[in-house]
Image (spheres, one colour):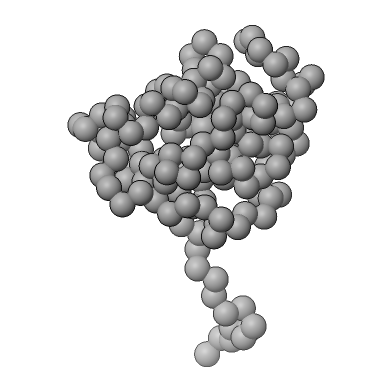
Length: 162
Protein backbone atom coordinates (compact mmCIF):
# COMPACT_ATOMS: atom_id res chain seq x y z
CA UNK A 1 0.00 0.00 0.00
CA UNK A 2 1.33 3.47 -0.90
CA UNK A 3 1.28 6.25 1.66
CA UNK A 4 2.06 9.74 0.36
CA UNK A 5 3.60 10.80 3.65
CA UNK A 6 5.60 7.59 4.14
CA UNK A 7 3.72 6.94 7.38
CA UNK A 8 6.46 6.16 9.82
CA UNK A 9 8.51 9.13 8.62
CA UNK A 10 5.61 11.53 9.21
CA UNK A 11 5.25 12.93 12.72
CA UNK A 12 1.49 13.15 12.34
CA UNK A 13 0.95 9.65 10.94
CA UNK A 14 3.61 7.65 12.81
CA UNK A 15 1.54 7.27 16.01
CA UNK A 16 -1.33 5.84 13.95
CA UNK A 17 0.81 3.53 11.81
CA UNK A 18 2.71 2.19 14.78
CA UNK A 19 -0.36 1.87 16.98
CA UNK A 20 1.21 4.05 19.65
CA UNK A 21 -1.73 6.35 20.14
CA UNK A 22 -5.11 5.05 21.17
CA UNK A 23 -8.26 6.91 22.04
CA UNK A 24 -8.36 5.27 25.44
CA UNK A 25 -5.09 6.97 26.35
CA UNK A 26 -6.50 10.41 25.65
CA UNK A 27 -8.74 12.51 27.86
CA UNK A 28 -11.62 13.91 25.81
CA UNK A 29 -13.53 17.01 26.84
CA UNK A 30 -16.79 16.53 24.93
CA UNK A 31 -17.91 19.99 26.10
CA UNK A 32 -15.47 21.42 23.53
CA UNK A 33 -17.42 19.82 20.67
CA UNK A 34 -19.99 21.78 18.71
CA UNK A 35 -23.45 20.29 19.25
CA UNK A 36 -24.92 18.07 16.52
CA UNK A 37 -26.82 19.91 13.79
CA UNK A 38 -30.56 20.03 14.43
CA UNK A 39 -31.65 18.76 11.03
CA UNK A 40 -32.04 15.54 9.14
CA UNK A 41 -28.70 15.07 7.42
CA UNK A 42 -28.54 13.91 3.79
CA UNK A 43 -25.24 12.22 2.92
CA UNK A 44 -24.99 13.41 -0.72
CA UNK A 45 -25.79 17.03 0.14
CA UNK A 46 -24.34 17.51 3.64
CA UNK A 47 -21.65 14.90 4.33
CA UNK A 48 -20.09 13.79 1.05
CA UNK A 49 -18.77 17.30 0.23
CA UNK A 50 -17.06 17.50 3.64
CA UNK A 51 -15.49 14.04 3.37
CA UNK A 52 -14.46 14.64 -0.26
CA UNK A 53 -12.67 17.91 0.51
CA UNK A 54 -11.16 17.05 3.89
CA UNK A 55 -10.61 13.28 3.92
CA UNK A 56 -10.73 11.56 0.55
CA UNK A 57 -7.16 12.28 -0.57
CA UNK A 58 -5.84 10.10 2.24
CA UNK A 59 -8.78 7.84 3.14
CA UNK A 60 -10.14 6.33 -0.09
CA UNK A 61 -9.82 3.06 -1.95
CA UNK A 62 -6.71 4.45 -3.69
CA UNK A 63 -5.00 5.71 -0.51
CA UNK A 64 -6.43 4.14 2.62
CA UNK A 65 -4.05 5.53 5.23
CA UNK A 66 -4.34 3.62 8.46
CA UNK A 67 -6.48 1.13 6.53
CA UNK A 68 -9.34 3.62 6.97
CA UNK A 69 -11.69 4.67 4.17
CA UNK A 70 -14.47 7.24 4.16
CA UNK A 71 -15.79 6.53 0.65
CA UNK A 72 -17.73 3.38 1.53
CA UNK A 73 -20.33 2.86 4.28
CA UNK A 74 -19.11 -0.59 5.33
CA UNK A 75 -15.49 0.59 5.39
CA UNK A 76 -16.21 3.70 7.44
CA UNK A 77 -18.22 1.66 9.94
CA UNK A 78 -15.53 -1.06 10.13
CA UNK A 79 -12.87 1.48 11.02
CA UNK A 80 -9.17 1.07 10.34
CA UNK A 81 -5.87 0.09 11.90
CA UNK A 82 -6.62 2.21 14.98
CA UNK A 83 -10.03 0.60 15.52
CA UNK A 84 -13.54 1.97 15.10
CA UNK A 85 -13.66 5.62 14.06
CA UNK A 86 -17.44 5.94 14.26
CA UNK A 87 -19.75 4.76 17.02
CA UNK A 88 -23.23 5.05 15.48
CA UNK A 89 -25.57 7.01 17.72
CA UNK A 90 -22.67 8.28 19.83
CA UNK A 91 -20.98 11.11 17.95
CA UNK A 92 -19.59 12.57 21.17
CA UNK A 93 -17.66 9.32 21.72
CA UNK A 94 -16.68 8.73 18.07
CA UNK A 95 -12.93 9.08 17.50
CA UNK A 96 -13.42 10.64 14.06
CA UNK A 97 -15.22 13.57 15.72
CA UNK A 98 -12.43 13.97 18.28
CA UNK A 99 -9.89 13.99 15.44
CA UNK A 100 -11.69 16.54 13.23
CA UNK A 101 -12.39 18.75 16.26
CA UNK A 102 -8.64 18.64 17.05
CA UNK A 103 -9.22 17.36 20.59
CA UNK A 104 -6.39 14.82 20.42
CA UNK A 105 -2.88 16.10 19.81
CA UNK A 106 -1.02 14.39 16.96
CA UNK A 107 -4.32 12.97 15.68
CA UNK A 108 -5.73 16.17 14.18
CA UNK A 109 -7.62 15.53 10.95
CA UNK A 110 -7.01 16.74 8.42
CA UNK A 111 -3.43 16.74 9.66
CA UNK A 112 -2.02 20.14 10.55
CA UNK A 113 -0.41 21.84 7.56
CA UNK A 114 -2.09 19.36 5.19
CA UNK A 115 -5.56 20.81 4.99
CA UNK A 116 -7.93 23.33 6.49
CA UNK A 117 -9.51 22.32 9.80
CA UNK A 118 -13.21 21.61 9.67
CA UNK A 119 -15.48 24.44 10.73
CA UNK A 120 -17.81 23.97 13.72
CA UNK A 121 -20.88 23.75 11.44
CA UNK A 122 -19.19 20.94 9.45
CA UNK A 123 -18.40 19.04 12.66
CA UNK A 124 -22.02 19.59 13.75
CA UNK A 125 -23.23 17.99 10.50
CA UNK A 126 -20.88 15.02 10.95
CA UNK A 127 -22.11 14.60 14.52
CA UNK A 128 -25.75 14.63 13.41
CA UNK A 129 -24.97 12.13 10.63
CA UNK A 130 -23.34 9.75 13.12
CA UNK A 131 -26.18 10.20 15.63
CA UNK A 132 -28.71 9.52 12.84
CA UNK A 133 -27.13 6.21 11.84
CA UNK A 134 -24.39 6.96 9.25
CA UNK A 135 -26.70 6.63 6.26
CA UNK A 136 -25.08 6.96 2.82
CA UNK A 137 -28.37 6.57 0.95
CA UNK A 138 -31.94 7.39 1.89
CA UNK A 139 -32.70 3.65 1.68
CA UNK A 140 -29.95 2.61 4.10
CA UNK A 141 -31.12 1.34 7.44
CA UNK A 142 -29.52 3.34 10.24
CA UNK A 143 -26.41 1.62 11.56
CA UNK A 144 -27.01 -0.15 14.82
CA UNK A 145 -26.03 2.02 17.76
CA UNK A 146 -22.75 1.17 19.36
CA UNK A 147 -23.22 -0.64 22.68
CA UNK A 148 -23.26 1.76 25.58
CA UNK A 149 -20.93 1.03 28.50
CA UNK A 150 -22.54 -0.83 31.37
CA UNK A 151 -23.78 1.44 34.12
CA UNK A 152 -21.57 1.58 37.17
CA UNK A 153 -23.06 -0.13 40.15
CA UNK A 154 -22.34 0.70 43.74
CA UNK A 155 -19.32 -1.48 44.50
CA UNK A 156 -18.76 -0.02 47.95
CA UNK A 157 -21.28 -2.36 49.55
CA UNK A 158 -20.19 -6.01 49.44
CA UNK A 159 -22.85 -8.47 48.38
CA UNK A 160 -23.77 -11.06 50.93
CA UNK A 161 -25.61 -14.31 50.56
CA UNK A 162 -28.99 -14.46 52.33
